[in-house]
Structure formats: structure tokens, C-alpha cells
Length: 345
Image 1 (cartoon, rainbow, N blue to C red):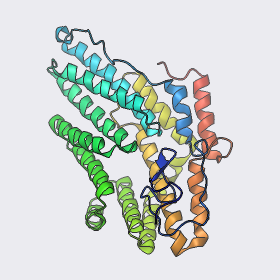
Image 2: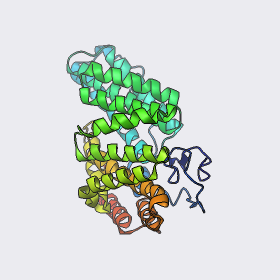
Image 3: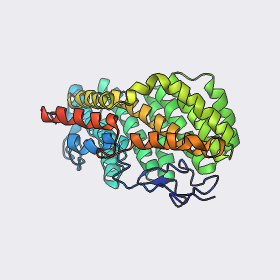
């Protein structure tokens, strides 16, 4: 049955729909959809991105008239760093759910700038520009996917995978292939084959977070296939796997991760995804999927627990006025930091 909360689109206020988990379909029509305004579903991290970065950077990342061929290797590396800082800033907007056409343009401009540098780069600058180009292309793919532009996203994921292979980063090749596989599954719905593949992959999960992500995906696929008991089993398994990370959901921990990441970026370090806020955001995202998934699955297997998980999910997405202590702690920590001078941008 088509989800009436999101009208079958799978998203609500630029976020995954909490009722259908992004599938656009539900097992049974909810008795009373939970209305969620954009303000209420805005996460604490998202509220402060504008304070930290200001408006999106627009225009060329490097001077379009500059003769890059006349620069030394060190000067080219500095240009790569300048473009990388623009990409890292855009990553923060995308991670906070603020995916807009302006962000697409910013990333495309960064890719064009990297291509200009690549044409004349040699030595270490050539290595760094290939890594930056692959990173920006993968991020652009993610932005297209979040906007529902699946054809463009697929093409960019393929391109990013090839670029990471050229750069010699097998881990990023594997991660990009996984993103591409997930996109194609969403588009093609080959559920049975994916269930088998994920159960095999579960045995070799590289980390607890990787294992939890696989367990959540298994739960979501079972739910999508109408197997509420199977989905409850996998969601409960993911809940156990994630339990050691529960303290990382705290507002102070999230704020400190964001501050540490932004300080690294503003000091000139190109994080390329390996940043404290990336893991912190990943943990929060996994917990959101867990809570929404459990609330959906338990409607059939144990309705008395549904409200418990819905409340947990809403606490992660609450505003300052309606939020729990974790979100209030995040806001206060960020405001104290900003009052003390914030970032030197």
C-alpha cells in the first residue's frame, strides 16, 4: 500500500520518511500519520551549519584566468587544498540534509577546478588532485541521489569508483561500489538477491558499525518484503551491535566532533570524509534508521513498543524547544564555542 505520509515519494522534508523508511510503501495504512513540520524535524547539527560556514561559497574555486602551468608543484598543491576546503564545507551542508541545486553547482565547479589542475599536475600534486577529484565526484553523486536524481547519481558513482581505482584507494572503491549497489537496489528492487548478498557480507563485516549497517539493511529489506518478524529480528540485532556507541549520541559528544572537524578543515587539512563528525553523524543516522525501523516493524509484532521507538526517533530530530537534553547540550556547546570566537574562516 502506498505510504500516505509521504504520498509514496519515500521522503518527507528532505529526509527519509519515518513511516515507510524511504520505500514509499507500507504494510498497512497508519491509523493517524504523525505530522512533522520542517522545523520540528530539523536536527541540531543542521541548525548550526549556517552559523559555522555562513552561506554557501559560490563562483570559481580558483581564478579561472590563472596560468596553472606556470606554478610549482607546491603551488599546485596549495590550489588543490583551496578546492578541497570548498568541497569539505559543502560536505557539511550535505551531511546536515541541506542538499540544494546551489550545492550541486559548487561541487561541479570544484570538479572543474580539479580537472584544470590535473591537466598540468605532476609529482605529489598529481596524487592529491586525483584523490580530491574522486572525493568531490563521489560527494556529487550522493547529492544527486538525495535530490532523487538517480540517473545522474549512478553516472557519478561509476565515475567516482573509476577515479578511486586510479588513485589506488581500494577501500574507497569498495565504499563507492556499495553506494552504487544500494542505489540500483532502490531503483530495481531485487530484494531476494540483496538479502542473500547481505547475509554473506555480514560474516566479514570490518567493524561494529559496518555490521550494524548490514543488520539494519537486512531489517529494512525484510520490512519492505512484508516480513515483520524477520525485520524485528534484524533490528534487534542491530540494536545490540550499536549499544556500545549509545553515549556518542549525546549533544556534547556531537558538538565536540563537529568542532574538531571544522578546526581541522579551517587549519588547512582536507579531511576527505575521515573526520570525527563523519563517524558521529554515521552513528546518529544508524540510530535513526533503527528507531524508525523498529517502530514500523513492531506495529505487527509488538504494538505496545511502537511509541517507545517513535519517541526515541523524534528526540534525535527535535528542535531546541521540543528536544531532549542531548540536543539542548549540543546547542549550548556550539553557542559557547561560537561566542568564544568560533572558527577563523
